[in-house]
Length: 228
Image (cartoon, rainbow, N blue to C red; front, top):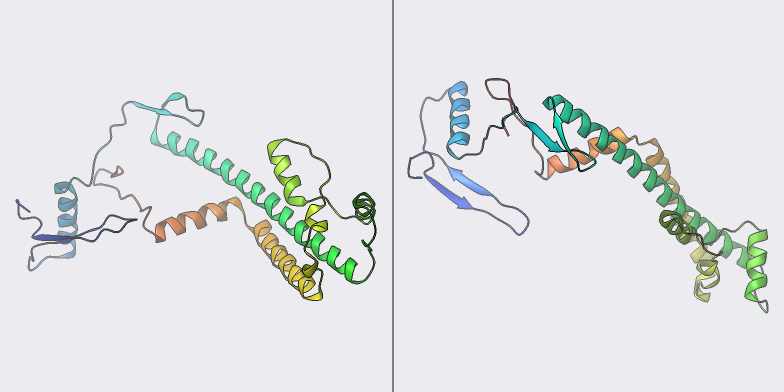
């Protein structure tokens, strides 16, 4: 404000963001080109732009080791490959997790239907006998627990608690309809996810960040270099 570039300002911060509203002196007769120059001058005066030297580009790489890069393009190429691989891994993980949830609801739905239709009778039978019947009829051990064990590299015994420990009130036609709806919803999610490429996932994340103001396009200065 001392040099007259800014006449007044307001602080509009929130708990999650920092925002200043600047008021500039009114100048008549500004053309669009002059206005653009004024914006660049304002960024420079407020020290919003900085220049980074590229003579010695030594950075930590994806292995957390110091590495000398020959150009900015090389940095972007390395960054791109790392991000690409992470999105591929993320997609595979999400498919695996969603597949476990889908199997969870599918098995619970089948179990409730089997109880209601008397295909499976659990009265006056031991838990071991019931679990043996479930195996014979193709019911899977708790898919969510199996998925977690696989992620941790562990192997565990068959666990049918997610079926046998269901409250009696849930063994109803209403519950069967609810489980069927949950299963169908997960199937739809799975279909969408399988059709979604890692490129689309990356693009969607960037659009989300752009919408909330966490990323912005980096302009070029008059020399054709990036303004950071």
